[in-house]
Structures are given as C-alpha cells and as structure tokens.
Length: 250
Ligand SMILES: [Zn+2]
Image (tube, rainbow, N blue to C red; front, side, top):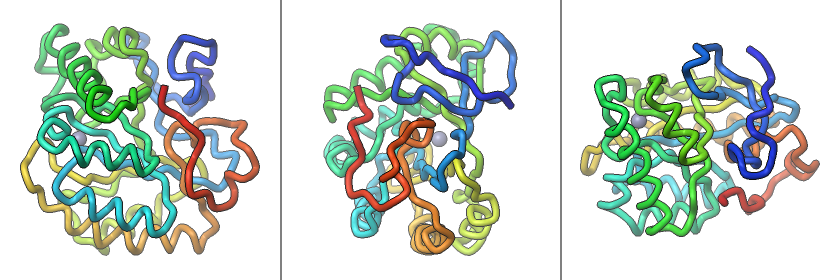
C-alpha cells in the first residue's frame, strides 16, 4: 500500500477526498482507495445499493445516534425512490455513485459503462442537488473501462477495508466481522439495498448496525463520511461528536 495524493490540486479528483491508502493495481486502472490514513480514531460506514424502502429506518437510527455515513446509490433505485435519496442528503450524509443498474462491468462495453455512471450522476444531482465525488463499482470489481469514466466525471473510486457480508450472514455474524476488522481509517461496506431489487430484505444489517455503532463508540471511534475520513488534516473536533459535517459535496 502507498499513501497517495489523489488530485489535491483544484479541479481534479475531489479535493475533499484528497488523501487515502491506494490499492495496488495495474496502471491501467484508475486510482482506488480502500482506507484512510488512520491518523484519527475514526471509521467510515458506507451503505451500498440503496436507496431502498428500508433506507428510512436506517436514516432514523443514524440520526438518533448522530452518525454520519456514506451511501453509494444506484441510479435505478434513486429513480424509483427519489424522496429517499433526498432524505439521505438532507440528513447530511455523503452520496456516492454505484452505477445505474448494478451490472458486472467487465461484461460491458466502454460506452455502456460510461452511461451507467453518467446517467446515475445526472439523476442524483437532479433529484438531490448533491454532486457525488466518489464512486464504488458494483461488486467492488475494478475494470479498465472505469478509468475513463472516473476521469470524465471526476470521481474517486472507494473500495473498503471491511465488508460485512450482510447479504448472507445473520446479524451477529455481520457485527462480528465488522468489529473484528475495525481499525482507525477503516471503511466498512454494508448494504441498505440488494442490487436493484424492489423492497429488498436488509433486516440483518438493520439489526447489526444497532450493535456495531455502540460497540465502536465504546472503543473510542467516531464516525466520518468517506471524504472526511480521507482527510489527514481534519480538525480536532473530528475526535468528538458532531451532528453535521462540513459540506463535502461539490
Ligand atoms: Zn453493490
């Protein structure tokens, strides 16, 4: 791994998401980050495949516990549930681009990959007013075709340090995985949806999150959005509790 400066200059890749730990990979792949520098005892919870009919339940919980998170949403889901996508942004969470229809990108032509992310970007901006600065490819699968899209849309790819396997594990198993893998600067991948399925069952995650948040707090962790987590220079108050982060969308 290597500490990278991902486009700290104005106008290039997400100045707010400027620092992170880069994944090893081919030079043909665009820059990808899977954890922050870990200079603070903070962690980023990320939720993929939303918005779903269950997202408001999660939002309620996060609001009650003053937890800020990052949501990698699919365009098709946000078109189905635009009011939920707006709720996510209104609550102060960071929005990320997770493609339109959640395909296996390596099966798609470059033009189709571009449309998956460009259409999602445009829809999220139109529906929520927030312009994502980060993306996560479906299934976390990096592909050569993604590089041009990232550069064109100015999106930093975010992978994860810990994946909860919450689509197949019971709540206790999800909780155990996340707590065992927790470390400063970690990025946790959970799901408030299931691809582009309508009314997905995310009940195990909704139970697990009620264990994960208090357990990490007890260990002294604070919760940051991905873009905050990647900043090595976050202010000292990042160590304490904050109801609302600084603006991180463009
Ligand atoms: Zn996904």
